[in-house]
Length: 605
Image 1 (cartoon, rainbow, N blue to C red):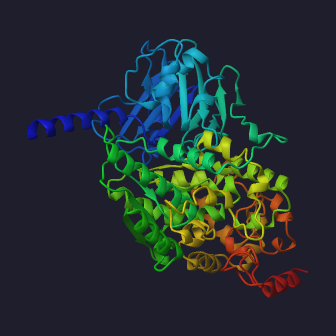
Image 2 (cartoon, helix red, strand yellow; image 1 turned 120 degrees about the vertical axis):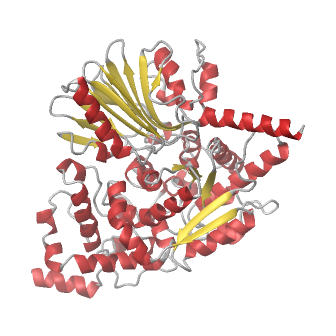
Image 3 (cartoon, rainbow, N blue to C red; image 1 turned 135 degrees about the horizontal axis):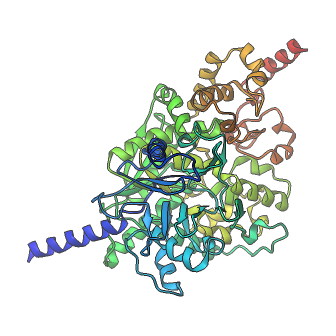
């Protein structure tokens, strides 16, 4: 009887793994309308798609069609890599689909189809096929809940389409060949050397060859100026976030949570831990690979995050893995980090390096998916510069812009730092339904004032003394940007490294070497030079945003306070009088003291 029970469990487990084997973070690539011969096109398809193999190291799928069309897929599978490989083919063989990401509500979408469809695989992304057939590319993306980029080729009329998720959690690029071909890739490195021009595929858009242009499909009410706000409801906010976390626990692979000890990652871990315990007590067919939730943290020895994360892990009862790295290990990784990130944005490079190092160790444990806390600061005004927001409407406008630009910053970091090692990061705070609720709350509730710390309503929603989600000092801990929280010495060491590699003369001539978006500090110059080594194309530099910023603000917020002008830096410590460990009065955003900056200006004069 015991042997039979074990055999049944194994069969059921293999079946569930098979059903999930087709999904996960992957790399997608396509060339449409190429003038190459079929033989040369296949060679080019494989050559370029292989540059994405770190995203999906387990299997590759290639489809070459007549008339110069080709689609590739680099897959992160679980077991049995010979079954159900992508690109997916529709039952009638008319459609070819390559997908990256997850569609969490795929079962509901199948049940709502007007014409019933019998899936050929267990892939959540296969639901794209009947949705496209029955609703058309214009009408179905807004029904999807998840993170996704996908390509569709229709053999009947040789048309094709591409779609990217609502805020750009998964990456996608579009390029244009000299022969009139159109290229798509999960990462820029797959097409940068091949296309006459290329750019970031904007989130919340689709491209259809029938119209030959990008069209926005994501138009939430909260993004429109003058939208009507709703009052803050503590229970509704908490419940919506719990739903968002539970959606992302859909997995039949080993997974865990990233736990920095800050509010956002701690809430994700708390909800995930409660859900796992609830499922275990209820029984059912849920499979937990580990009897306890595993959590992961990274930082310099003795850093604020390391200490706070351990406290949260002990409180939640997770199996905690605390990874420390040395400053030299971080500095040694910078060049490789910039290659994978495909950006020279200062705050992104700073924060991505420890995340990149941690992801390698997590993947070595056999973990293939982690939950992460990105997006909360943009939704709830969490950055320290929001202390200076002049009014509710100005704050709301800043939040809208911050969310719209996440694909250039935090989403890019979370996806590419982890996918460099074949690890997938899921972000509950950016759930579309949760965004609709949280961003429709009256922005007056998000203003920071006397006695109201940043992200007050989020903290309040989970402040349940009778059944606490987190220790009180964690729930009400001051915001630490990830690049600060891993250890204050990290950023200071990056500045020192840049100062050793970029002379005063080099920096003074920065606009000559980099006329487009010239670097504003030696640190930024250092990253830009490395980026140019990897991606020398002019189009590559144009994919990276620029402009003044303080503590990750947009340029608009630089006008909120006179003190911001001379302290432009993406560290939260640049906000004078707010951060507990703020830089002193002599700090300049360039990393110089005020006296050094004044002397330089006098010398130029």
